Amino acid sequence: MGTNAIQRSDGGLAYVDDASASEIARIGGTGHRNCKIAKVAIAGVAATTGGALFAWANPENVAIVIDLFEIDITTKSTGAAAGAFGVAANATTSSNNLIDAYAMGATEKVVNNIDDKGVAGKSVQKMTTTQFLTGTGAATTVGLVGFVYIHYHLI
Image (tube, rainbow, N blue to C red; front, side, top):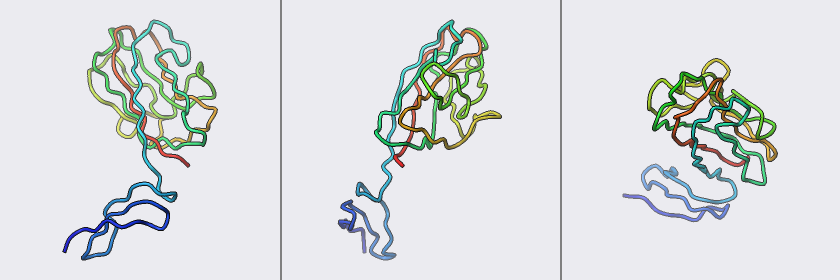
């Protein structure tokens, strides 16, 4: 017994367990939602305007669903500014629908929209082709260094 690779009817490849006949993994095909991950650098700024930390445009030609949003804070900000991260109408609008009011000066760590989403944050967020994912500090975030990781799939 073992695992076999088979071609699926949707053009993708699947690994199937011989004993149970269940798919262990699948790659590609029109019926499969391939997860993509975008990595964007962030650096603290004195500005508190919408999108001052970063603004990321949907790179796809269709709507996407953000499954996971992570912030890897490698150097915390010198102040105690709260950060708001979410999907907004444009690159200069604040949003907090992924992570709401996270203390950017607290510690160097990885935070996400599942464990650290705050009051208004969501664990899943739809994003249209014209929207932006923005990051904004409520006060200065000078000194902050890190990356955001946007895990998403196409709709």
